Amino acid sequence: SPSPLKTITSHHHHRHAYPSVKLHATTTTSTNLSTRMPINESYPGLQKVHTNPDIYIISQFLSPQACDDLISRAKAKGTQRSPVAYAGWTDDIKDLLGLAASGPVSWGAILGAWYEAQGDTSSNVMVNLVLHALRNYSVLFVMAAILIAGYTKIRADGLQELRTSTSTTLDDLEGGNSNGVREFVLRSVDLFGPPTSLRDVGTGNGN
Image (cartoon, rainbow, N blue to C red; front, side, top):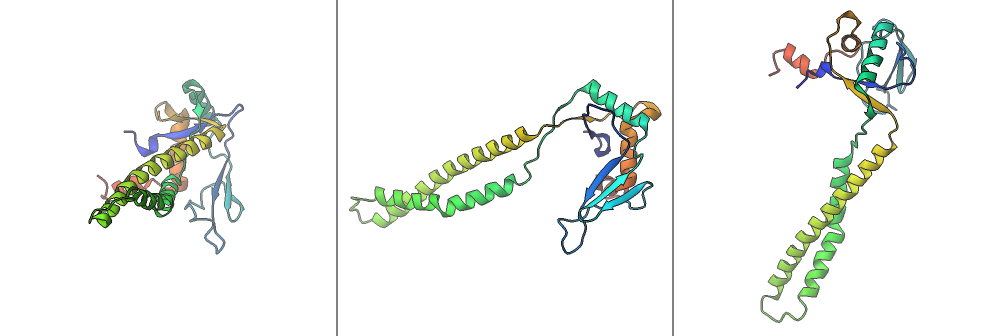
C-alpha cells in the first residue's frame, strides 16, 4: 500500500489554484469546540486571523509552479464527487439498537409469548412462556437490526447526495522540482509534523 505521505486530495476548481491556504483549528479555552490540531506556529508566512476556532492564513504555501502542476494532474486524472464520511454511524446504530431492545423488541416478545401461551394447560406453562419470549425476542431483535442498518445506509446515502464538490487523489511523487504533490507533502510535514506512523518508525516502534 502507498506511504501515508504519498496520497493527497486535490479539489477541482474552475479557476487557478491560489498559493494561499486557510487552516481551521479549535482553541483549548473553556469554550473550545474540540481538541486543537497541533501545528508549527513558527511556520514562515503563517498568520492567525481568528480565534476559537483558530483560523490561519499562509501566504505562498505552494509555489505557482506547484499549483499549476497539481491542477494539470487533477484534470488529467479526472475528478469525482467527494466522499462524505458518516462519522457517527456506529454510535447511531448502537443507540437505536439499545432503544429497540429495551422498548418495542422487549414488549413485542412478551406480548407474543403471552398470546402463544393462551390455552396452554400443561404443567410447563411458565417454561413455555419464557421459551416463547426468548425466541420472539431473538427474531424481533434481528428484524430491528436489519431495519436500523437499512435506515443508516439511507441516511449515509442522503448525506452523500448533499455533497456537490468534486475531488481526486494524487499519489505520484515523481516529476522533478516542479512536482506539486511532492512540494505539498514536504511543506505539510513542515507545518503539521510527520504522521504518527512515521514517528513510530523513526523511534523504532514501527513494524
